[in-house]
Image 1 (tube, one colour):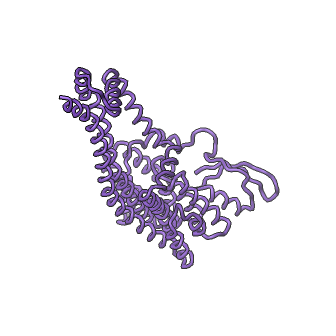
Image 2: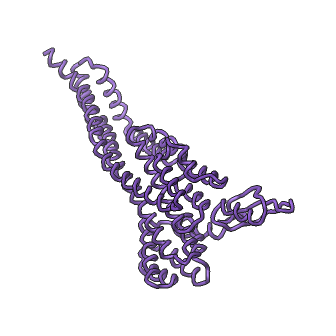
Image 3: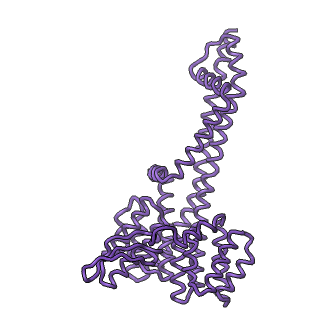
Length: 405
């Protein structure tokens, strides 16, 4: 990445320069080597659009996560088999059926043939390949173990994607059921209830409060069908926009942490994500400060990501990596801090983090299975209550009418 950095040199003079490094921490490290002090850092380097940004705008959209995982696995396998990087990329480009992916791989091949390092070629497509991917690729190139580094990247991407897919899968079922209840309820109010309400009016039956509320709602919906469906569309659209906004994400996360079963699931999911990212980066040879900063971006701009960022700041001051995690037990379980501490004592931080990631990923998968068994009876209860209230409100006037006959 390019950074526009304002430095104070050993002579006391100030200068501004463009530095191309993997992270902000690396900028500080390079400045210290020169005996300079960083005054300010602005991400992006020179003003205007960089080549990387232009490339990422023009090509690269429409590439699925599964396709990126497959690309990484195939590339690692072919490099391990002895193929050169440019030839391996050419094979992948011919095999790919996705036009967007073909363009990206073709550009990577062209850049590599020109003599550009692979991680620099990947930086031209920063919207497709994450910082974690690029950093691990750079570490693999510098150590001569690119195939192994790509294998680690593929495993990290695969485990993260599988975990995310399982969690989403657990949430799809209740979402579909609740949406169906809303739609069926609206259709009944528009097409079924008016028939009953007209009968009640003809017979002059005294309606209880619950029945009057349903009948009035039905009358409104029956005479404003388009408006009702418009309101429903706006409602669901607003929910979608809220859940995908930064503020909405923070609110949902805060609420989720307070829920009995969901809270533990959320904590373990973020613990697995942070541990997997750090383990992959450190195992590939990325230095600690850069690994922590990249892991913070992988975790996200939330309370969990802030803990990882704090860990990087404290490591820079000479403190242990485990200290920041240990100070936030409400977010990260004690287990992750204890395992990191053991790794720091034995010099095997990456191995310990890998074991933490495996443990929490497996546990989250098991919890998502259990979650569906918990959600099903709750949904049945909600549906039963809704149907019961509706049936009682509609049947009560009929019973009162029959008692008068």
